[in-house]
Length: 196
Ligand SMILES: Cc1cc2nc3c(=O)[nH]c(=O)nc-3n(C[C@H](O)[C@H](O)[C@H](O)COP(=O)(O)O)c2cc1C
Image 1 (tube, rainbow, N blue to C red):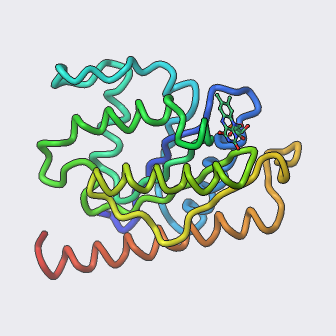
Image 2: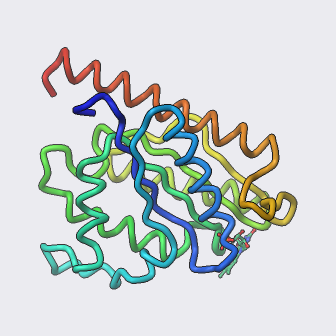
């Protein structure tokens, strides 16, 4: 937050042409931008270009360079995933696995960053279990999951033709964006006083 604007990176979505999670991520980042953040997104097609993370590699694959650099510079992250078989999709998990390349940073992995989670699944059970699985990964990466997570049952709630969402879903995305903004501001203030 060097110039006052929070830098928020969105990661997620699916390769589906009508991906609900892509749209939810876009809508959330738009909310963040409306609250003053600078945003960048890595969504379905970009994530599909990533190789399976190679645990023996110490440098990012070319397709991962921008993702790793963006997260390194980020104040906060939003992870949006479909629920696949009760957990996050392999596409999203592979992107998260690439954050291993941040392990030797001053602030490794997701350290010091608020992380919002968005899940779309065609049933409520997978909404809940997937939310928990993503939060577990965030904890492993030393990130700070926001108290509020957004879960959307995509069998019940559909995006409009223009990609927008119903009032309830839009309201949930607004709460998430607000929590990301607030945490980022608190964290910046704490760093300023503690020099960490
Ligand atoms: C491989 C696969 C596994 C899925 N597993 C579940 C599941 O366990 N529970 C569930 O409620 N929905 C499941 N779904 C449905 C998706 O979560 C749902 O369609 C979601 O909205 C897809 O997100 P997207 O539109 O961003 O691709 C699955 C879909 C696929 C393709």
